[in-house]
Length: 396
Image (cartoon, rainbow, N blue to C red; front, side):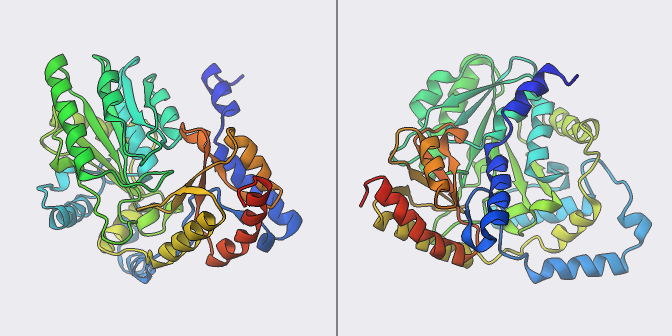
């Protein structure tokens, strides 16, 4: 008999993954070229050539027992030092290897830091719309996820509501920018106001409130948009990063946490997070991929492909009468549904073999997420189906 907690989690399993599996079934039935699956944020741009070159060189030339063996739970010291140096050069920070913990992707980083910080009943605040797995990550450690309702005007956080919902039990706040699912980048003004609120509340309650900045999409921004590096604005910030998107390596599960020396109880937090990687069963981040990302620390995937997809999809949908939030980053487009119930719209889209994810899965009803990290031809070929959908919804 599985645990009671898992019974509920199985029933509420990821809508995104369910849509992805449904897409495979439809592709088998109608042919992959006739199914337009926008459900999963799975990069379709190949990793930079430097990644493959690094893999081959490291495997061929490094001593196997050393390469594939255990290391410090926080990761190789030289890899962590290389990442810290890169961050310092890019963002004018002052990190070293003792501020970096290598993780099994961003998801493990979030679990590691929540294991480190949360006691049962502690509250974690996040801003809707948000990545749905946050709820599960917090629940893993018997925390309570507190949602801030979505601001559907520009999808910047509702900071008035945020200030009202901070309590003595607030232990962490999650921000995700560029945001999944909206593609919105939180402005510097937003970050400054949010930081001021947190400083005020820490002083009022005499507690430490940690700001967890979840940043797997940091490198995927368009035009001259800048993503503020939040450790420079709020002392108690911890950053979670993943190479899944910036190097197109989602299946390799490699990322890191930044725990600045300035955070409250730094030594205890860093030591506990290092232990958490072991006791949660990760032990350490994959050894080969640690070496690879250190070699490729300043490499990036070519996001011009995503930018073309973004422009074609956004302009095509707006022309058909749909209301969309134009993404500033990531590879998602958040579209308002003509129907009050977003799940009704999702069901209607399936009639034209179009798979999108309901916004209610992200805490924002009446919208859908469209992942445009697909072949350009998929977007072009899907637009006639979106036109039929628009006609059905009486938009044109």
